[in-house]
Image: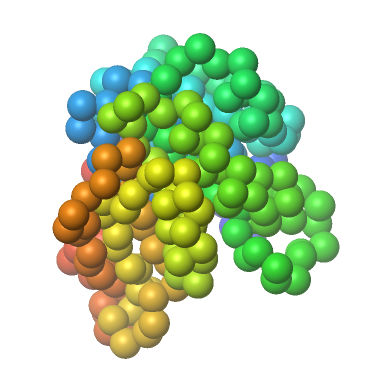
Length: 236
């Protein structure tokens, strides 16, 4: 039976009441996102609060975390209140779109591990379905509302299924947001990429950084050096 919590180096994430548990996608995004110079960060769909807490560990920013689901929000509140950086994380229980319409803050960084499996079969559990699909927050809505709440030098950092990357890039271009960093993520070197880490900026980059990484070594030889180096401040 899986644990109802995940132990990191400096904090614990409980996820027994949350539809989406701690997973590699969230850890990757929290570790990869560029927080240099960021003073204000918005975590969209915070779930357990994992990414907000990771970014608080990595920066001195004030972080706002938005979550639409009441149960997930309660779990995030518990995790945030027990972490060392709780004074810098503010939790908001509301839809992202509503938060944007109310907010007077313009953010340096918007980060999101968005709903995915667009047009795929829905899992039977309603909460898990809402957490994993684009029913309540489509890619179009995510990018459009993020563009409204970014400051003039702001950036967006997301992790996506590989097959959704071209869609997001097209939506971003329409909203005058441009790729600055792209990483194609493979589970193992011999397999096709399944995820894409994507950083979008208001200012168009003439030569965006494009790279690849594998989470595991070939065969079953454990985590790759690159993944281990990226996550070493978090995993035990």
